Amino acid sequence: MPPDSTRRQRLRILVQGVAGKPAPEDEQESLFESGLLDSFALPDLVSAIEKEFAIKVPDSDLNPRKFDSIARMDEYLAGHIG
Amino acid sequence: MAAYLRSFGAHLPERVVANAELAERVGKTSEWIESVSGIQERRWARPEETVADMGVAAAEDCLRKAGIGANALGMLMVASGSGSRGFPGPAAEVAARLGLDSTPAIDLPIASAGSLFGLALAMRLAETQGDVLVVAAEKMSALIENDPNTAILFGDGAGAALVSARPGRWRLLDAVLHTDGHSREALAFDGTGPLRMNGLTVILQAARKIPASITEVLERQNISAQQVAVFLLHQANLNLLTRVAKSLGVAPEKMFANVQRYGNTSSASMLIAASEWAETNPEPGPIVFSAFGAGFHWGAIVADSTA
Image 1 (tube, rainbow over the protein chains, first blue to last red):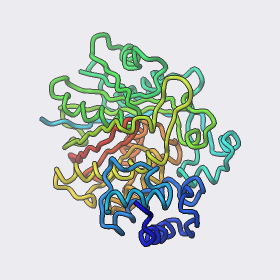
Image 2: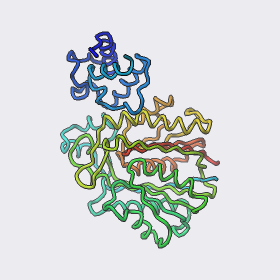
Image 3: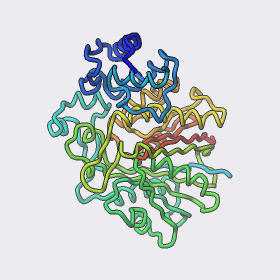
Image 4: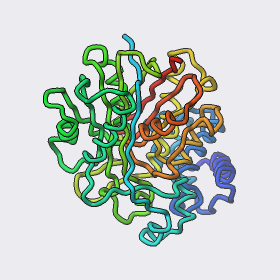
């Protein structure tokens, strides 16, 4: 499924809101390895995604790799909200 | 079936290891260590001091506070993920050094949630076994090297709790326990080499599972989080305690915290916290225990004061 630019823009806004800093231009860039988000920001980010996209991320999907970058989050959402 | 908490005990090694001592070793600053963990210092055991040494000291403290001798025990449990050998675990040595020669003693080698699982089991066994002493002892300093993600977090120590069918200061009301082994590699110690931890996975899972298990046990007892007098949680990280408070909608001050002074002592931390809290002559009201750790194992217990 191709990237959803609108969804990625919404994700970018969420990341910026949690990090308090602009999200990276490169949508593949790791938000954690770059230092933009730390381990305690990750639960906030998942909660923000659940609220924004009206989904429930099950515990079995609480894998940091799924939320490591804008692109990965978009891929995850594509599989869950179409 | 009724089970009560009669007393707590604790033992902390004398050696204080401040952040400044660790900072250079892990290539970070004291301030960074405190900002990511809330920890200012921790205790480390002497090289020759063992898990069993600390466990015996905490057990004796707990028994002294309960006013009973070890020979009155019906069962001993020793939780530890950092025992010095595979088997026999430290329970056998702790039992022998307490003077027990036929009382059943079992090990709970499940690290951080070990004391929680021990309390929950003791709650169910006290009526048939008699008084159950739950001990948790950890020498985490032996499991770490120079990885800043783990070396800054852990400390050594031991805690204990006496669970009895005879009335005590707190009545144990209910317990929920859970295990999900799908993430068992996220936090592990293989017996040699340093402890391994994927901090992102651990925090992400703990931040959801701890509040969920607390809510689960409180709802079963028709108690709201706001009614709880104190939350005595596994002392993993001060930032995590604050996050759990936020998730439950309670003030951070409701989370008893001593992780700043002792670091994360794995299974021992919850009982060390309970022991310190009990010494403060706390106000009556419901109390909640909760822990999350390697496995993942997690859960929560609710108790209420009897006075």
